[in-house]
Amino acid sequence: MLGYLEFHIEQGPVLEHRETPLGIVEAIAGQTRMELVFTGFAAMLAQRRCRCDAMRSLQPRSGLAVEKEALEIPGLVATVGALEAKPGAANVIAGECRATVDVRHASDAARTQSVERHSSKAQRKLPGAAHRLTRPQN
Image 1 (tube, one colour):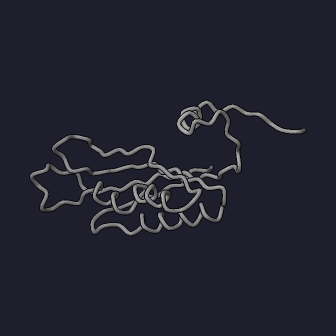
Image 2 (tube, helix red, strand yellow):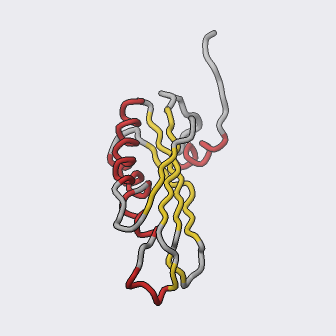
């Protein structure tokens, strides 16, 4: 076999932006997907003095930080694909917050190091909050 041709329509906008008619694959990136779940205590906004906010637990520890790291490490791609706060009412402190995180890199070692760094950050919970980190099979 001399070569292999595979079309990925989702790359069209990237190629168009770069004014490049064709892209060449240089590596196949391994990926790790995780779901972070933080639980607190849902309460009315007026009860904020006894606040145990699941969303506040998620923000500094989670996949939101992995996106920043991806900008700093060549080849690392990461995103928070979904973010959900429950119960989801405008005037209620979140009792549960879920985030999905996808991390990719051509080097398994680089990807694993990033995932481990962010997994350990996610384990450092705020007082009164619980957490769960799951890693589905890739």
